Length: 240
Image (cartoon, rainbow, N blue to C red; front, side, top):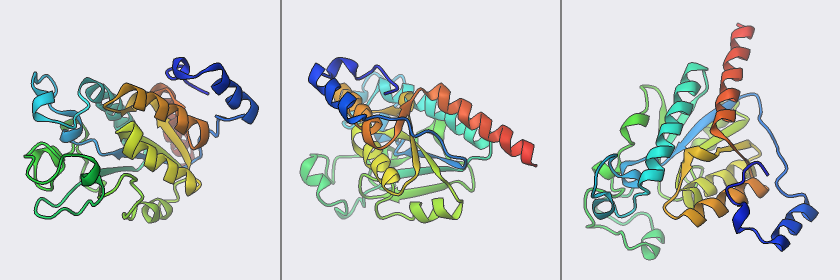
């Protein structure tokens, strides 16, 4: 295990299960990474500095989201500088028809809830300003949790010969977790920079980090991932 953030929610018997099964081994990095930013949208964060985010952005993660966006921006800048592809996703729902299915049966955030959710064409659906994509960077719209479900992400990663997916964004227990599981199931090295993912509920965040690190990816400090991206850039310079 690479983090202490979940240690206080584990019992002694939990730790024994981990030890006995040798869960949470470090898989490491591959040689051709891509940075994936999952649903870093206004509805997920609210507006930095606003005193009424909770009232106007019912699904926002607030301060933890703003902090994570800063770390994601650092990874995005490094990826661009070092020739690493950057992909983003948006959770987008048709404002005139409920096309996300079961989710609206579980979350009371259906049609008619205003501008600050995830409906196409609204402020809430837009990618947060610090992470706006550059011309030529790919943004994939999705209807479900995983960035792989119902999108061409897998074929795009194959086309670029990617072997490592760095998963960032939100929320940790929903779309990030689903994406990390699918990434591992497609046999990509899967990296989750701990400070670059965020959630609404702390225990959901921490137990999801624990679970992802246990069986489908490497949860590690953002600085370690930044160092890896810089090594990728240096390696490419050496080959040129």
